[in-house]
Image (cartoon, rainbow over all chains, first blue to last red; front, side):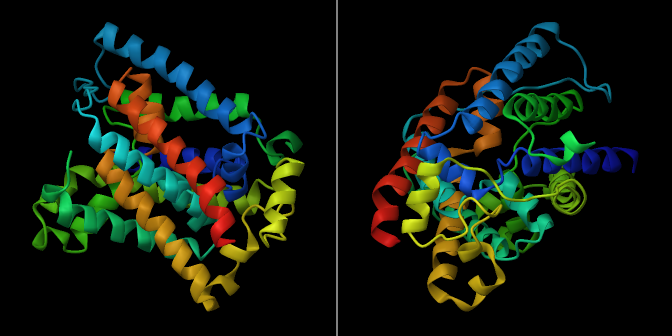
Length: 138
Length: 185
């Protein structure tokens, strides 16, 4: 129960950050792909630099999680096709819907109800991928 | 307090995203939002249709709780932490979007034309929203992650696959905005 509350709290924190940073705004995504402002690049870039320092530190220090388990940061399977093709498809949708999965949940909470249509589409896309997985080149 | 109610600058927001990931890693979990979509498909009965959805979804319950929190966070930010929801994007983007018919550019958080409730009565808009969502869902699973899983977590872990995926995200986004938008708007 305690753990469940912690996960919800982490989510609340992240949801607030997504909204207040405007990373959940369709307009900001459009502007990013127009290279008109540094805002989104600053967000992703600074998150990345700090994330990199943290991740490398955790891997080197071999520390346990706060619940006492081992921390496993798995490598991604090596390949090219799935990342390139899947990445491009994701990018097309990201720019059109103006939202990636995290912001989708944020926008739902913020009350932009047509995001339900986007979420429905995302679930459908996930489902169709699951059906086709073995037929697709990875 | 007032500064909290303004849009948060990138140098505050970016580090807070890194902090989110750090907390999840220290809790023994990972930062990845799109895998919830797979879990939801399994809960909805997808495990009867494809092997991909046959996994112990209860082990992913924690991530659904995070997603539930994200919804609540969006509600709190919108209703209690924001005075003016208008997003001040640059003048060139505003001009271009207004040409496309997005009159709300510069005056709203989301384009009213897409995310106002009148979208529900416009079949064309609904179709575009479904297609956009479909590509996000399909692409994220094909690529094995989204912005959080690849662009933040994967690149932080110095993963070449994540770099390929993130380059793909940008190629797709640029193609959509620069080549496809002029055709559909």
